[in-house]
Length: 340
Picture 1 (spheres, helix red, strand yellow):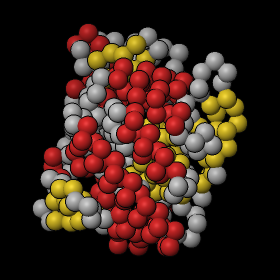
Picture 2: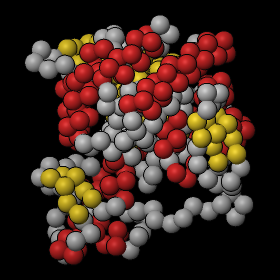
Picture 3: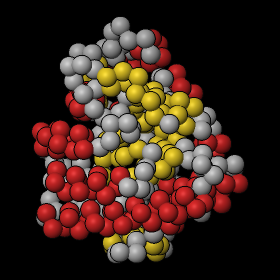
Picture 4: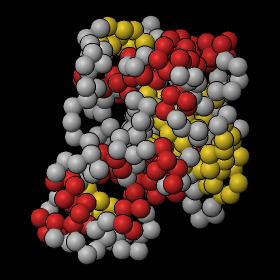
């Protein structure tokens, strides 16, 4: 399922391949976020041209809207969004720290309020697996308890215990219902406490997950603290298993984490920064909303770049699109209700 093809001798970086039902994912790999079955402002064809191999969607959000019936009627998540590569689905556990979901954590599961219509739901490990199996993603994530940054040691310790219990329930339910095509990853919790993360890893190993997500990081802690935690946690994870650092996507963070041995990443970082006028170039990042760029009509965003935008449009024109909130440059309108 996961083959390590090269180990760097001077760092912990490695090159690997994750085999899925929808093709091989070469690692290190970055997953653009398609929370609601689309990557904001980017079409599937554009993603393919960029070399994207794999996306990640949010199973619980899709369960709420448009609903499993709509997706399954289309033939599953791949056909629904017209994506022929691999898809990961996140469990929805991260919504615990999102205020708009008004989540309450209990041993049985997570009680949510639907931010779209106010209805109440309980996400249990078993329902979490059923949703992801129904969606037909290539890699499903176990349900975990992700406490917010700043939680006490005791609170994070309790979250680790719950994460381990839920992992066992997820694995048991998934094994009973899966046809073997969908991989299941466990999620390591422990926050910035390596000893708690080690406890979590050791407990999760007995479930024999295909891979491991590293959760509870990149949620507000200082960067150096995140790196230090990774240095302590990564050696605890079985070498032969893929390691997925959840929610990390800045260029600096990617390079640092790859050198420490991380294989897979996901983040809204690229699309969110682009929608908020930040462009990352070979010479550094720029805020394209500054007035001085509006008049740069004879140079591309990044000289030497061969992408469609840099080949065909000037920095000044892209600046104009963003200032006008054009759909060519940015999506900046409130989504319509399904009742509209």
